[in-house]
Length: 257
Image (tube, rainbow, N blue to C red; front, top):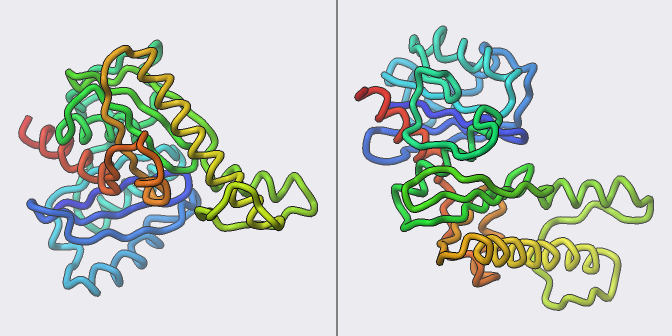
């Protein structure tokens, strides 16, 4: 069994891969101060509910965009799973792609992992739209190399900023509205968030394609990707497990190497 850990700014996903498929996944809020012991208590119960234990694992891989969380996630693997994990960003861990940017070392690990997985499963060139804390648009060429991208505020971040900055505006859920014109404050805010992000997606994808000059396949991932998939022709596929599959592929490549 492989334990794949994807630590984002908002959530940490622990995924169990049995060599053939993703057997189960667990999600927890990202807290940089959480200790290895606390992760272990949480995971022990969740694994037992799925008929698993720490001893069932023979491999682990970690990707994080929260550097402060890495120490305890690594300790979790070493102390409780008795494994030395592969860590994305370690020079010894090869991703199998070129990063064609000015400063490759600062590109988020999650963006490169998504590029690895997407290149394997979809024809390139690609635009990967990841709906996370930030909404990112990443460009992968036909050879599978990472060429750069676009970073914009995530939709939940935008919704929270709107609530905090305007005293009369409440917190609202992100949801598709039947009309663009809202007849009250909440539907007006929801329309602005949802249809505003549809405009963002369509506008950026169209401009990227025009600048790139080739047909491109657009893949959405991230928790909120399902909200926008099928709502716009700009997105061709929704793939919620893209990052975990990328981690599995990178682990297999480096284990074989």
